[in-house]
Image (cartoon, rainbow, N blue to C red):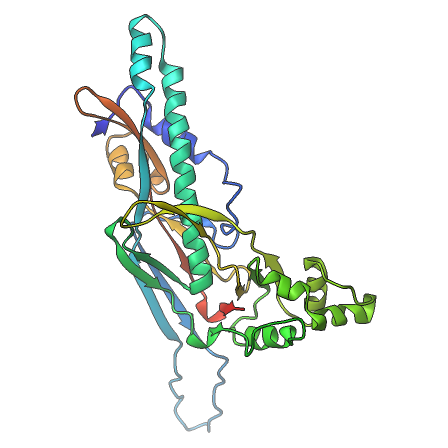
Length: 338
């Protein structure tokens, strides 16, 4: 395929990048978008516990102290995207032969397809963010014939579950306090799946703690749970809205709905010490920069192009990206299944 020269390629990409975030997106708040001028990522996690120096005599040499431990995670940022046939092209050409100006109509047809590709890339990244937030890893198992795992190194002790299944009589705040104490930096955010949340709202222990000051209700709201947790210096609850996105099976291509976050999952972390979503440079962006269509500084991020292929020619929109969600402070991340 080759660039379709009737369309302003830079304008298509610029229009796509101005599209609003999808209403189904909720994890970009915690793993925000950043652009990187590369197709590889590298994360260095430095762990330095609260050690003290030693006293020494005046004539003794200064000891060389132990340095912090360093864990480096690196890899290639995977690509994702979709192409769509601009089926209106033939009809618009016929109109052009009759003297019509089809520039605006063709651009609108292109942008409609680009918006679809933008939404599907964002949906796929939302699934990836949810996977990273709930497992500490980004994994592909056969998708696009790729088999890879980026393990960001959540300590085994930070992956937890209750000693016994939670019910209304469980010491929920006690277990949450034990889990939060495992984090290197005290967490102040708690993402809670839609099946885990009712266990907090119906907890007799939490209802009674709230009732000591206000009179025990039959059930709590999220705001009331957070009032109790604030008094115990526990992270605030942020309910995860259940979102299901259809994904294709790597073997059959058949689409099935997938939850973006485990319904019984809880993830705790300190706000601002988590990670981000890195968007790198696609091959198409490099071609556009080399052809002078965009500046090199504009290359990172999602890119949309319009390509022509075959004889008779067919016109396609191609929406492309390379991206991956990454974690920076996994020693402060707590992953629970309740």
